[in-house]
Length: 68
Image (cartoon, rainbow, N blue to C red; front, side):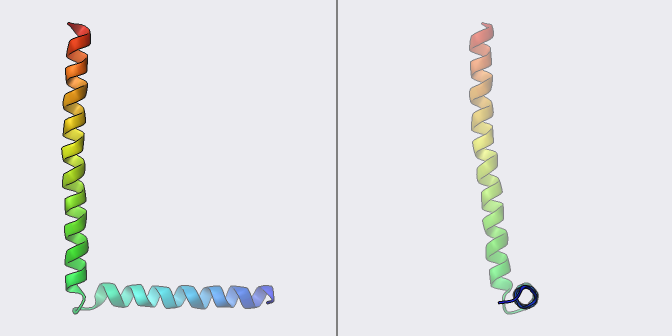
């Protein structure tokens, strides 16, 4: 393929992908998908906070042992 043909194909593929993402994100029927993604992110954040709190406690314990 010529260079110009590859560029045109890339632009068209990008436009199609962008249109598909826009339809998925803006559709009322896909509110369940949006809710699932939002719930997943909230669970991920909560899990990260719990792990960080555990690491913080371990660091504090180690520091107190070293300074004692």
